[in-house]
Length: 279
Length: 172
Ligand code: SF4
Image 1 (cartoon, rainbow over the protein chains, first blue to last red):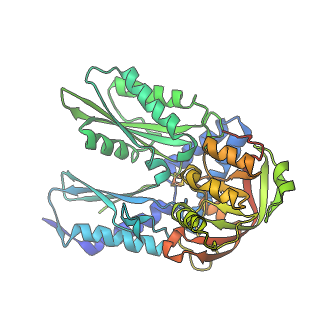
Image 2 (tube, helix red, strand yellow; image 1 turned 90 degrees about the vertical axis):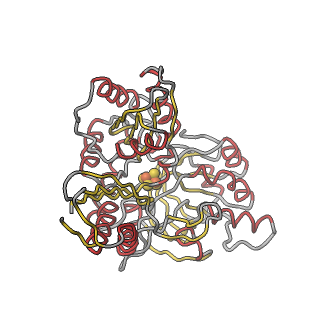
């Protein structure tokens, strides 16, 4: 059985935190460039130009893309035949701490959510999945809270129509408006349980926004319709109008119960940051 | 493009219109949720504020740590509407300008009108770029709040757009 030491994991997480926060994802950057060329409203173009320049500068100067360096979400895919030597949770936690410190990132966590005390880098939120083989895949997604605050869940009736679901998602985006730093990337989770639909929506943000993955035709059509209808909302970059409100929509589905139909929406700002490594 | 300096003069404020592009030079003070809570408490208890806010601008911003050799880290705007419940009292106490991202409540729009103030927007999610317009940075109050401490920044040609003007004109 293959073994991996937690020191290796800690080091990897630390580097992922810095990479995610300082280098905008290439799929997002190329979508921004396409949007810039298509945008016709002057103020929107101006804003898109600033976003692109910001990404270039952040990478060059190794600065955080955004001062909200997010709540670090760590996705772990653990191979069945891999043995971790040591404490995995601690390795991830320490990796986040050292990465955030080394990268001059922001302490955006409060230890006590009600007293609002104990400003800190950690703890991250960790999600674990099992995969075949002996690899360990790690992904860090620093999630800013301007947009996380706009996440929504609705438990639809099992008889609900796709049109109703689409309307709910569009309403969520409209409500997010200028406060969640448009243009957005919209992650949608359909199915599972209430909690799992929310996780699916967040995981949808990890997928390349320019690639069309294979899905059934209902999901494919929903994705296409959502993208074009959201872009007609005229929210625009910074919320000042324009045709660029959404850069991409990703949908993840999962089987669900005969009595329900959970739908979750997780919006990301234009600063969608994530970085992955296979160990 | 209009040029604005701090402290703000009423004459200047009333000449600004929603949608105007601005280059700001002068001091601004960062403050977000927790600092606002403390400032309000100080006003309520008639304590001295840690900053003289008359004619000044508050920037809704909590910067990252400052990398070696730099003046400030990434320092873009945070969501302004979270400060809506505090801003009227600060405007009443003499605050003249705010910088943030996103829309404001109806109450704040009328308070901006009443006290002849202005709400500016700046490039949201562009903290790296915006750091290049900051010439000086110093923590001057509430250091225990970490990134939420009040920092005094000296900015030069900091890019803004007038979001809500002194007559209540708004971009949203
Ligand atoms: S919503 Fe995103 S871009 Fe906007 S301030 Fe938060 S992290 Fe930054």
